[in-house]
Image (cartoon, rainbow, N blue to C red):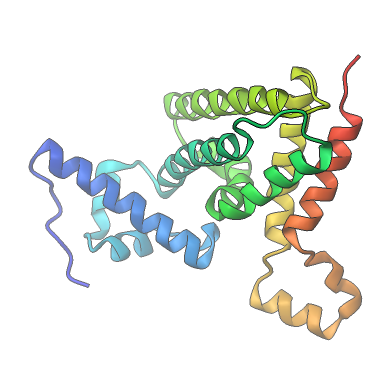
Length: 217
């Protein structure tokens, strides 16, 4: 791939370069997983010189945190759209909405692990503050949407359900998308294969159980 000049001359060019890097990182993460995204691969995918990334993002981690911030908005929109106009839904239907939405937003599900593990700790204070502010705004709106649609949840319970959903997804997404090495191992050792469980059915069962037990006095 031909690399373009290092410097973008206009504000419009700079914005486009930033988007090019984000889009390249998104393509790589969706194709190979977030853990495979590196500075070199991103700049190669975007057709830019390796030094270009640091003109727009301080690090690969900051670039991925930007993707996570955008992914929060995408997940919120997806869940809110699935719940819009619906009321008094039973626990199983609410759980299915959340699980199926996570399946439809694979980058968000994959990033959940990495945000908590490394991305937030690898950026400066103000960048971390911006991510937290926007992700919690989405979280609060999602909690309100769950209360409006569910037959079972008040606001504190909806927050508990969201927290459990995010924590479970961060683990289960990785487990249910094993590497080639682990997939081969599970074929050879079927008794361990239960770890590579189906994502949506497992998430739905866990979240439904949480909803049923989450009612607050």
